[in-house]
Image 1 (cartoon, one colour):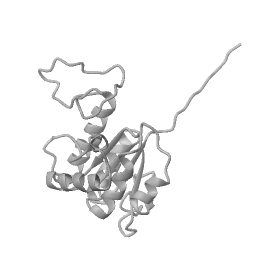
Image 2 (cartoon, rainbow, N blue to C red; image 1 turned 120 degrees about the horizontal axis):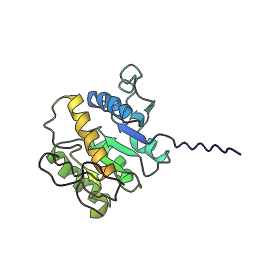
Image 3 (cartoon, rainbow, N blue to C red; image 1 turned 90 degrees about the horizontal axis):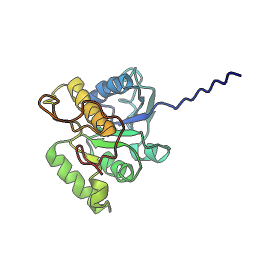
Image 4 (cartoon, rainbow, N blue to C red; image 1 turned 135 degrees about the vertical axis):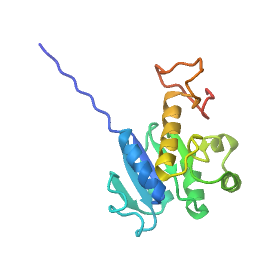
Amino acid sequence: MLLLVESSVPAPRMIVFGAIDFASALVRVGKFLNYHVTVCDARPVFATRTRFPDADEIVVDWPHRYLDSQELDSRAVLCVLTHDAKFDIPLLERALRLPVAYVGAMGSRRTHLDRQQRLRDVGLTELELNRLRSPIGLDLGARTPEETALSIAAEIVANRRGGTGAPLTGAHTPIHHDAPRSVGRIGEVA
């Protein structure tokens, strides 16, 4: 008797909040990494199939409202590129309390400090705030949308696989990690 068992798991989710030029590049990289990629923005003029032909889904809704409607697993990654407190704060207040793999937000270091204070003001704890990857991405010296998308993807992979984000040249760390480990901030084992 021959028994064939086929198991399939849906692709992990990547939700990109903010239909900006950097999001278009991130969508392409997310698809390359085999994520099911959704772009969400409250502004219908920006969240269009023409601007994001590679996205699996394009949603016109307030980001926090859309996030509230989703059931996400521990593989999901949330990339907040809205760069506007009226979108960021209610969205991050919810996102940082979800059991997702990654939450990153675009912005300068000054924007990050302001955002952290606003999130404290709405009741987030330091433990919840420590989950936020902001400014989003690894330091690659990125300037263009494509370079920035690569920087964000590198941080997501390092977080998922337990990498440090450090150069492999001269390092005495494994090149490949056999099993994902629980990681808080890059390089810190939880």
